[in-house]
Amino acid sequence: MKTVLWTLTLLAALSSPALAREIIIAADPWCPYNCAPGEQREGFAVEAARLIFARAGLGVDYQVLPWARAQAEARAGRIDAIIGASRAEAPDFIFPDEGLGHSDNAFFVRADMPWTYLGPESLRGLRVALITDYDYGEGFAALTAEPPGSPNVVYTQGNDALERNFTMLACGRVDMVVSDEAVGRNLLSTFAARDAVRFAGTQGEGEPVYLAFSPARPGARELAQIFSEGWRALRASGELGAILARYGLEDPEPAKK
Image (cartoon, rainbow, N blue to C red):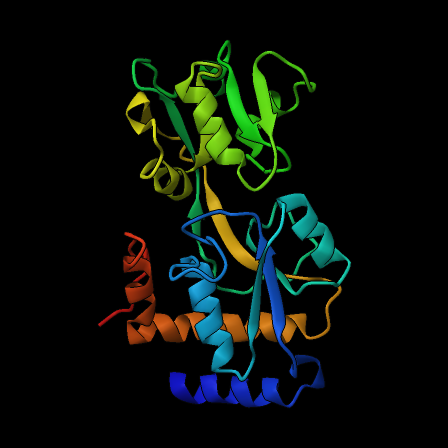
């Protein structure tokens, strides 16, 4: 039955003139979700998207753009989708039924710093490094509401923002870096001063993130449907698990045997 439904989805999609083209997906680097374009490991979300849309007869053009620009380009209808968006930060976008994973705020502190997250109050007095235009959720509302230039919050931007945040942490210029756990651990694995940094747990209030489709691009709903059906097909075949394994990850919802 799953094969029949997937085939019908492909046939319907391929009959749509709006989908007779290459689709463009973009985001700032957020490895292992999306890494460097053209590399052997472009990121599990990019690998899965390429495979899913290739089976629908569609090519994928993956681009690296600053996060705010990627959202703006999608809202203007110049690209098809952004990688790693939550429903809260892009409520006007078209979301597939299947997400890429569950993202939670993870805390990275200096290795010599005895600190445990005990709620938003435990962040008071700490110098925290965040990334401009990222959504850190309601639990960080008080912190992210502090005005620019606040001594307690340092914002960075650009495609190397997280690496620069870790550098500031290792040098003692900030006390904490906040990142998605998988993204932070991935960067830390190759970070030159990784021994000066330790993972200090997660907030425990994460949310799903998606390949979110442009609200202004023709065929967006069909593309979202193709992605959902394709993601489920990759999971059922074991291909999704194999892709994730290349990044040291596991499928949180493996296919039932």
